[in-house]
Amino acid sequence: MKGHDFKRWRKTLEMSQKEAAEALGLKRRVVQYYEKGERGGDPVKIPRTVRLACYAITVGVNDYHGPEKDKKKDKERDETDSRAADSDKKRDKDKKEKRKKKKNKGED
Image (cartoon, rainbow, N blue to C red; front, side, top):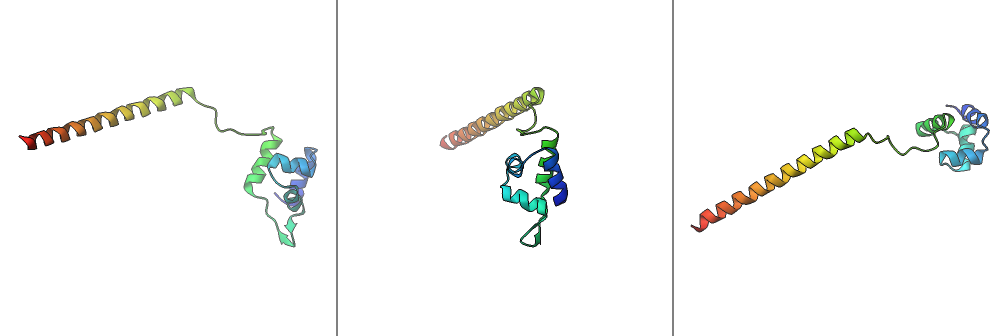
Protein backbone atom coordinates (compact mmCIF):
# COMPACT_ATOMS: atom_id res chain seq x y z
CA MET A 1 0.00 0.00 0.00
CA LYS A 2 1.43 3.35 -1.06
CA GLY A 3 0.57 6.76 0.35
CA HIS A 4 -1.98 7.54 -2.37
CA ASP A 5 -3.64 4.14 -1.74
CA PHE A 6 -3.85 4.91 1.96
CA LYS A 7 -5.42 8.30 1.27
CA ARG A 8 -7.89 6.73 -1.19
CA TRP A 9 -8.81 4.15 1.50
CA ARG A 10 -9.53 6.92 4.00
CA LYS A 11 -11.50 9.04 1.54
CA THR A 12 -13.52 6.03 0.33
CA LEU A 13 -14.67 5.50 3.91
CA GLU A 14 -15.36 9.24 4.19
CA MET A 15 -13.07 9.60 7.19
CA SER A 16 -11.12 12.62 8.22
CA GLN A 17 -7.45 12.15 9.03
CA LYS A 18 -8.37 12.42 12.70
CA GLU A 19 -11.08 9.74 12.39
CA ALA A 20 -8.73 7.42 10.48
CA ALA A 21 -6.06 7.92 13.13
CA GLU A 22 -8.51 7.08 15.92
CA ALA A 23 -9.81 4.02 14.07
CA LEU A 24 -6.26 2.73 13.53
CA GLY A 25 -4.93 3.72 16.96
CA LEU A 26 -2.46 6.19 15.47
CA LYS A 27 -1.62 9.86 15.84
CA ARG A 28 -3.09 12.13 13.17
CA ARG A 29 0.43 13.18 12.19
CA VAL A 30 1.31 9.54 11.36
CA VAL A 31 -1.71 9.36 9.05
CA GLN A 32 -0.38 12.47 7.33
CA TYR A 33 3.06 10.86 6.92
CA TYR A 34 1.49 7.72 5.46
CA GLU A 35 -0.57 9.73 2.98
CA LYS A 36 2.38 11.83 1.92
CA GLY A 37 4.63 8.76 1.77
CA GLU A 38 7.47 10.51 3.48
CA ARG A 39 8.61 12.13 6.69
CA GLY A 40 11.27 14.78 6.57
CA GLY A 41 12.28 13.73 3.07
CA ASP A 42 12.68 10.06 4.07
CA PRO A 43 10.28 7.48 2.64
CA VAL A 44 7.68 6.11 5.06
CA LYS A 45 6.53 2.52 4.67
CA ILE A 46 3.03 1.69 5.88
CA PRO A 47 3.42 -1.31 8.21
CA ARG A 48 1.66 -4.57 7.49
CA THR A 49 -0.32 -4.27 10.73
CA VAL A 50 -1.74 -0.94 9.58
CA ARG A 51 -2.53 -2.29 6.11
CA LEU A 52 -4.36 -5.24 7.67
CA ALA A 53 -6.20 -2.91 10.05
CA CYS A 54 -7.31 -0.82 7.06
CA TYR A 55 -8.73 -3.93 5.45
CA ALA A 56 -10.45 -5.00 8.67
CA ILE A 57 -12.09 -1.60 9.02
CA THR A 58 -13.15 -1.72 5.37
CA VAL A 59 -15.00 -5.01 5.91
CA GLY A 60 -16.61 -3.77 9.13
CA VAL A 61 -14.33 -5.16 11.84
CA ASN A 62 -13.86 -2.45 14.44
CA ASP A 63 -12.26 -4.56 17.18
CA TYR A 64 -11.08 -8.12 17.74
CA HIS A 65 -11.07 -10.03 21.00
CA GLY A 66 -9.62 -13.32 19.79
CA PRO A 67 -11.29 -16.40 18.39
CA GLU A 68 -14.72 -17.52 19.49
CA LYS A 69 -14.55 -20.08 22.26
CA ASP A 70 -15.11 -23.62 21.07
CA LYS A 71 -16.91 -25.12 24.06
CA LYS A 72 -16.15 -28.69 23.00
CA LYS A 73 -12.42 -28.01 22.65
CA ASP A 74 -12.38 -26.07 25.93
CA LYS A 75 -14.09 -28.97 27.70
CA GLU A 76 -11.62 -31.48 26.24
CA ARG A 77 -8.69 -29.27 27.23
CA ASP A 78 -10.07 -28.90 30.76
CA GLU A 79 -10.51 -32.67 31.06
CA THR A 80 -6.97 -33.27 29.80
CA ASP A 81 -5.59 -30.71 32.26
CA SER A 82 -7.58 -32.32 35.07
CA ARG A 83 -6.27 -35.81 34.24
CA ALA A 84 -2.72 -34.48 34.09
CA ALA A 85 -3.14 -32.77 37.47
CA ASP A 86 -4.56 -36.00 38.97
CA SER A 87 -1.63 -37.94 37.52
CA ASP A 88 0.82 -35.43 39.02
CA LYS A 89 -0.85 -35.72 42.43
CA LYS A 90 -0.70 -39.53 42.30
CA ARG A 91 2.99 -39.46 41.28
CA ASP A 92 3.80 -37.06 44.12
CA LYS A 93 1.87 -39.22 46.59
CA ASP A 94 3.72 -42.35 45.40
CA LYS A 95 7.10 -40.62 45.77
CA LYS A 96 6.17 -39.49 49.25
CA GLU A 97 5.17 -43.03 50.25
CA LYS A 98 8.43 -44.45 48.85
CA ARG A 99 10.47 -41.93 50.85
CA LYS A 100 8.46 -42.75 53.94
CA LYS A 101 9.03 -46.51 53.50
CA LYS A 102 12.72 -45.96 52.83
CA LYS A 103 13.01 -43.83 55.97
CA ASN A 104 11.14 -46.42 58.04
CA LYS A 105 13.45 -49.21 56.75
CA GLY A 106 16.47 -47.19 57.90
CA GLU A 107 15.03 -46.93 61.43
CA ASP A 108 14.60 -50.72 61.82
